[in-house]
Image 1: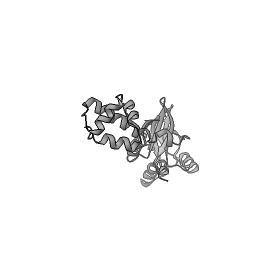
Image 2: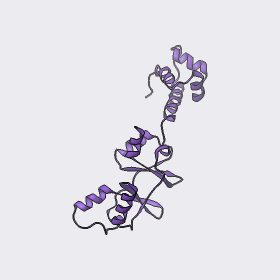
Image 3: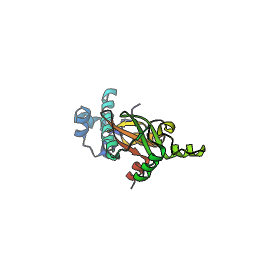
Image 4: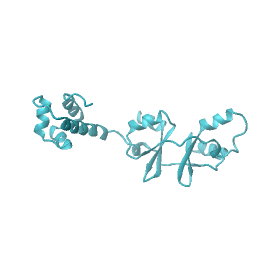
Length: 182
């Protein structure tokens, strides 16, 4: 469902767009935008949809993307690594989770939480392989995924892997989003 037609002018003004800029972005004439905004003309559904799509595009265009906030230094675990080796790596780099790679494909994830869960079950986990205790892989997104999408994914996952041409390029965690609030 489209918003009210009266929203067009309010949103355009808030974005700092001129009528001509909105008209070009939505492939209509500037005079048509002026008539719609003044209430002299009710646009067809198709025209209203194009105008609102252009406004949406301008609003999203200002939003940061995954590539803008991702950590580019991506460290992986292999399923054959021992938990002891991985905990050393995590401590060294100050991280709490890693994607697990097998033959250049992400097959799972390992986190401090997963390790702690297995310690809680008793026994020595340091000699276990990562493959024995790894969890589901982190979700993946493309470089242009908007931050609003990442917020949603990170409410259900500890990290998101950023992909480019089917290859992992970076990782985003909750702490990366928190850095934006500063």
